[in-house]
Length: 637
Image (cartoon, rainbow, N blue to C red; front, side):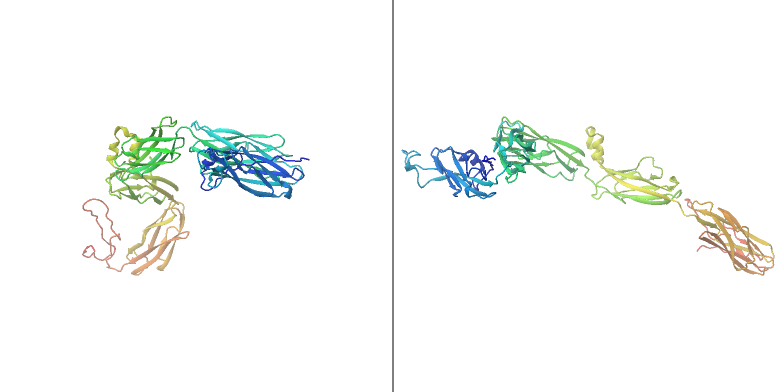
């Protein structure tokens, strides 16, 4: 059975309010441990002693004293001394219960003892007394725990405090090693993680980041990366998250001190960009900061590569990572349309700066100053497949800010047959006239194309000259794309019957009169079946049909018999039926009395078409009766 466990020492940084961390590290009073974690064991020695080194820096007449930690189970000696080398801390576990843990704090103070006269030394009794001045103070947290008896793993780190530094200014990682061992029995598994103090983080890494320890220690590489860190001391702790029962998590303080030559840190480090409207609007101002992340003082100057970009201030100084802000303003109103580039150069006036100069790329996109409004923004069309009547489209193109612009229009993709332009260009405001020809899409389909309207100021194109190139010429054009989508559909089959009315005139017992009815099929269904019949109103036996049914286009002749008919009007309806569609053609027979005159033109309407200045058409008037033809008067109404 193991009778005694070696002490496990944990160190963490402690900083009192009002006392700077740098003072605790560099002067005043320094301890070799920043935290103590001690363990006894049931059945082991009742007392445990650990030594802690103490260093008191100048002034020469200085000593230290220990306050607090006044408990029966802890003894610290000496509690006051001049130029000491250390103290012994004794823990008495005789009053502890198994698994009991106690905590206490010891305060170490560095004193400046004023001398009554120049003839005394610091060791003279007359030098002590009231008037002692506390220069620096350090608190040492102490934890003691009594573990139950029996075998157990006890994690132990070596070293207990990691200190890394870099004075080269090369921004290369700095490494050291941490060893984890087992001061007890068995084994334990663990994971290492870093926790940071202050705003800087992410600079510490450990390889491997986990492991298991039995009787053989495991070594880890600890890496500190200085890239992006300011000069000074950066603090973190490594936590050892282990599964050893009854043993607290280990915390190992890590300090990383950076010094060396001055070094630039420019934020943001990416390129600066902006957008300008030619003749209308400059890009928004931007800013960047310059800081010295090395040692000493950094003096520098800032220069612009082009006259249209100014930077204020043009010089600066930075020390201890204090950033200096610079503002970048642009005067790009008269720049050519396109992408304009420049650079900002930050050069050191301080010798030995390794990363001077720093170059910041600048890219300004100059857009045309005018704007264009095109309405409507799209077309959704539906036409009968194979329709031969074109449909006209009109687009209104305007400049809302009344800019003098030239426009041109085109169809994309090229070679589209069903969409063509009638107007292709002009000055704004203007109208784009296009025509959709569904006959070029004979089958039902969905097709799409676009009318592209491009507007530009000829002066913008001219300013590019030979240096502009095709790419910048394209930047000077305001391009608007208007989608045109056409869906061609199959037209529903329909009956087309001509004429819409039949009128016949005959003398009594003059034989028969006939007139044809033409039956057509609209909508692309030439084989549509139809039936024909007569619906009498007066004179059911007067009319007869040459056919009572058919399939597709055809002709039905309507015949009227006058034999035996008295003078008067005889009428019926000729009914043409195809499925649910029905067309009625009224049919009338006028049987004239002897000597009656019946005039007809054979037409119910006259339509004149053409582009000539004067149009004319003759109309014949016939007398269908056997009476005399009267004198006629013709007038328009």
